[in-house]
Image (tube, rainbow, N blue to C red; front, side, top):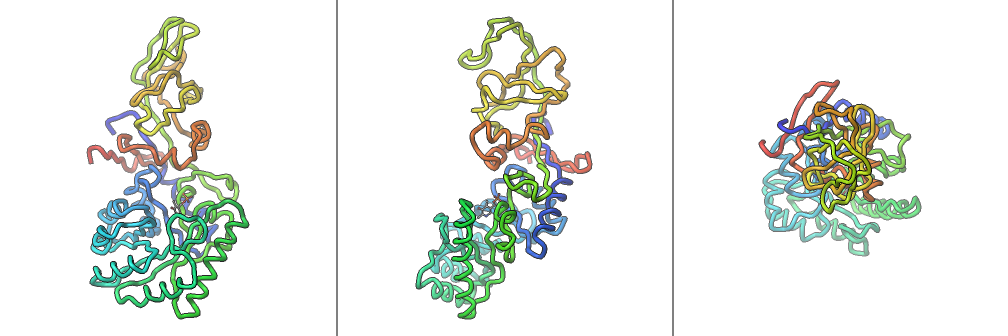
Length: 370
Ligand SMILES: *Cc1c(COP(=O)(O)O)cnc(C)c1O
């Protein structure tokens, strides 16, 4: 590991979460969203762990993320949900990656570059207005043209819900289904239709269709819908003090001398900072847990370190918990004024990932020296 600051990822819990999700989804295929380094959990080992339990459709945002997974195991079915610029489409073909497209021109280009059928998913615009083919009187014709291309296999079609309200989500879903039905009447069968992310999957069993695209819930990042599914957070974050000292009343800590000791105080220096992914704006709000007791982070959080106001019971040998059962990703997100996904996806390559199952370390990943 070579560093006390590390993320611990519980693969046993991941497997439990998958079971809960599969129970909820019945016959619908579960696609695992592994973009952004699997929401900070480490895409390579997450993919491997999921593949071992029978999940092999992995969704990512970018070509580079797809290549990372394909280079690990060519058997993975990897779908890029985002846009790949034309000049890189050759890579998509060479590595047998499934690409999202939303225009005939992209399909034509893929077709012309390909030497065997290339799988695509067509993204349909239903109201989110990010990426997608807009629905108008020409849409069916355009998709028909795509389906006629010799080297293009339309494997899927999808849209993404904005999750503003049940009404607006239903409007989007109906718009999508209406197009799917029109396609069927002109003889175009789309094998994998999908609409739901984690929240959609929980809220709308009727929208599951052929596949769900599950990110947050896989990692146990519970949402407002918690309670419907039995899931557990799989990630925790830990370190050990690098230094403990006492300072006198009136002495100060960190940049700008902003924290002033109201009394003689024990200060522990911890070897993590904002460049590991911990939000710098946790200044004045963050807590860590040591031997079951909470201690405040004090002073401005530095790039690589921060300071905690402790007491005489804390030693250099004690484990410091930055995220655990008590201090959740959700707590951190709400204190930092962001969402859970941002908290976890910010963990950087500098932080070793330690994978455990049944309290045993089964793998460690250290991106810097791989
Ligand atoms: C990120 C993403 C998902 C997964 O979202 P979660 O809320 O994390 O489950 C699903 N679909 C698309 C298109 C995405 O970009």
